[in-house]
Each structure stands twice: as structure tokens, then as C-alpha cells.
Amino acid sequence: MPTISVENYLKAVFHLQGEAEERVKTKALAEHLDISLPSVTGMLKSLADEGLVDYLPYRGALLTEAGRRMALRVIRNHRLIEVFLMKTLDYSWDEVHAEAERLEHAVSDTLVARIEQALGFPKFDPHGDPIPSADGEISRRDVMPLSVATAGMRVRVERVLDQTPEVLRYLDRIGLRPGGLVYVREVLSFDGQMFLTLNDEDVSVSESLAAKMLVTEVEPP
Amino acid sequence: MPTISVENYLKAVFHLQGEAEERVKTKALAEHLDISLPSVTGMLKSLADEGLVDYLPYRGALLTEAGRRMALRVIRNHRLIEVFLMKTLDYSWDEVHAEAERLEHAVSDTLVARIEQALGFPKFDPHGDPIPSADGEISRRDVMPLSVATAGMRVRVERVLDQTPEVLRYLDRIGLRPGGLVYVREVLSFDGQMFLTLNDEDVSVSESLAAKMLVTEVEPP
DNA sequence: CATAAAGATTAGTCTTGCCTAAATCTTTTA
DNA sequence: TAAAAGATTTAGGCAAGACTAATCTTTATG
Ligand SMILES: [Mn+2]
Ligand SMILES: [Mn+2]
Ligand SMILES: [Mn+2]
Ligand SMILES: [Mn+2]
Image (cartoon, rainbow over the protein chains, first blue to last red):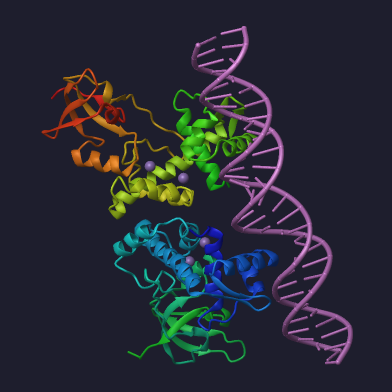
């Protein structure tokens, strides 16, 4: 069985390589995991030895199929745990991430399967991240950052790309969460500041915050 | 924070030292944890350095107050997790132990507190083991092994001292679980075999199995 | 009470996963 | 196109936690 450390590296490589499957640089991993560069180099070599990543010195790493399976398993655990904590124990969406980060390595496959069933096979976690199936399928949606929306558009929030509790609590406070419908009233040309209407409330968000919200356009009512 | 290994050693010392608080020998720990004798010696030294056990070479170890606190915290996590898995996810009492053995090291104090609250502050786990409170209180009951009961006695099952799935499934099958009322029909003098009546069913258990059931005498109806 | 057996510790290794400092490779810039 | 800057790897160490083989201490036994 993989160690917690190995699971965290694989998960990090998965997230950093993205859909484009670009080689993940040592530096990016080191920063993401807050581990020194030489430590990352060492781990990449050992993951390559175990056939979990395809690693080219000085070029970076990509997950192999085996590595991808392991990464998706941990991500699946993480996201189902998040939904479970909210549904069963009244956790709020800014609290679940930290707890799931440790539990993801301690749950058995059968426990996660039972959680999934008890929850009715949810497809997304509280932040809108897709939940991989037990056999490694993960759904993909066509979304865009809110920051590219233009005045007059109506969009639905699909996903939030930030797990920081402060950010999540703020988003919750202004009502900007997955499923929410947003009307874009105005976008300032010089700094991207956006003026939105949601639930009949007028709010305003910076371009950098809007860039973390993934949305889809919806037809006007 | 203590490592998983340290937590498991402390828990083992707690269980092995018992209520009599007898020094736990290296050999007993080695067998209980399935770890070599020299490894145990090494760990005991390091636990002593950290002030978690009182260790005398060749004499064995006892928990200090700090060690006891840590052990009770892990035991509390373990037992509340067991109750939670049964109540929320339909686990059976023979499945929960293995799962709790890993989760006990991964849950936060606040998660456990929420679990405890959601369950209504249970005092015992599914096997009748007492659940320590958040501040380290643990209730003690006056119980005796079923094996010392004599013909004609009526007893209530309070606790099972075995976590082996096969044993637990068997006990469940014959209806011998905490809370169950038992009438002792006969005890064989030469091998201790016991003939019992519970729920109007006649069953028979060996002395060694009966020794693992802790009971209290109850008044006849 | 002397000695053998059982129990425990010491000595010496190994693996995992982390670190810093130094060397080397790659990319950028002048 | 060469030097500087930046990224990466190599070299060398350390701590935790496990192991085996050898040695010492305690306990049991004739
Ligand atoms: Mn998360
Ligand atoms: Mn993690
Ligand atoms: Mn248990
Ligand atoms: Mn454990």
C-alpha cells in the first residue's frame, strides 16, 4: 500500500499536470507541497522506480496509468468525505477540506463505497469538484472563469477553485456558491472589477476572485 | 503531534497495564503489536525520553499522566468511530474495529466531538467498552467473566473482550451481545462448558469463550 | 545454589522521507 | 553567443521506526 507521502505527491502531480497533461516541474511540486527541491527530486525518482510517474530529469514528471489510478482514488476519497461531513455532521464548506486532507489516507475502499451509497452517488463535492467513480472515471464540464464573462451575461456557478477558509466563508456570505445564478451587470475595463446581481442582491468582486469561480452561461429566463 | 506508531504503543501499554497498573513487559508489547523485541525496547526508551512512559530496563513500562492522556484520546476516537460507523453507515459490530484502527489516528478532536454529539454522547461502544470523555474520564463497572457464573444465575452481558470478526459474528448469531439477558442452566464441572438460555433459545458456549464475556448479575424477574 | 531457559538490551543495518550546501544543467538576457 | 539567473540534481546527513544477531539480566529449576 502506498504511504501517505506517496499519495500526496501523486495527488499533487495530478492537479498540477492538469487536463493538458503538461510535465510537472520539480519547482511546482516543491511549492505546492511545501517541501524542498531536493526532496522532491528524490521522491520523483522513487515514484518513477515504482512505475507511478514518467520522470525525465530536468524536464518534470507525468503520472503513469498506475499513478493516475492511485491519485484518483485519493481524490475520490477526499471529495466524498467532504460531502459526507457536510451532510452528516453539519460541517460547513470551509471546514471540510482540512479534515478530508487527513482522512483521505485512512479510509478503506469499502468505507468510501458505503459513504458514496449513503449520499446517493453524488457527482460533485461541496466546491463543485467532480467526484471520480470507483473505477477512475471523472466527468468533465465545459466551464469558463467568471472573470471572462461580459456585461449582460447570465451564468451559473459550477465550481470554486480555492479551498482557503477565509475565501470560502466570504463567498458563502455574498451568496456566491455552486448552483447560484449570477447576472453580470458591469465589468470595469481597466481593472476587471465585476458588478453582479445574485438572489436580487448586488455584489462586486475583484477580477482575481472572479478568476477562481468557474461558471457556465445560462439562457435568460 | 504524536506519530501513529507512538499512539499505537501508548494504547497498547494502556490496555496491557490494566486497572491494576502493572508494569508492561517488553515481550507483552512485542506480541500485542507484532513488533520485534529490540524495536519495542527502542521505542520504550524514546517514549520515556518524551515523558510518556515510566520505563525501567528489564522491568517494563507504565504510562505517565501525559501518556495516559494520549492513550485515552486515541481510545476515545476509536470507540466513538465504531459507534458512528454502525449508526450512520450500517456497519456490523465485527467490521468496525479494523476501520477504526486506522481512522483513530486521522480524526481531529473537533470531528470526534461532533460525532459524539450527533450520537447523543454514548457511554459505551458496540462491544460494551466504555468511551472516555474528552477530558479523559472513563467509567468503570463492576463486572465478572461469564465463565465464573454458576447454574441458576441470571446475568446481563455488558462487554465482549474479543474483536476477532469470526468470534463477533458467532456471538451475534447466537444472540450473545451487550444488553442481552442470560440464564445459566448448567455448568459442566470438568471442562467449564456452559449451557445458557437467552431470548428463549438454548445455547452452549465453551469456558474459554465465556471468559471473554463480561456480565453483571441481575435479579430474577 | 548453580545453571539453564526465558526475557531484554545492545550493536549494527536498512528504508523512508525529509533537510542544507554544493555542483550542474537549462533558460534567459545582454 | 557568452554570462547570469534560475531550476534541478548530487552529495551528504539526520530522525523515526523497523529488523537480525549477539550479549547481558532475570527467573526458574534440579
Ligand atoms: Mn478539498
Ligand atoms: Mn492528503
Ligand atoms: Mn475496537
Ligand atoms: Mn491504531
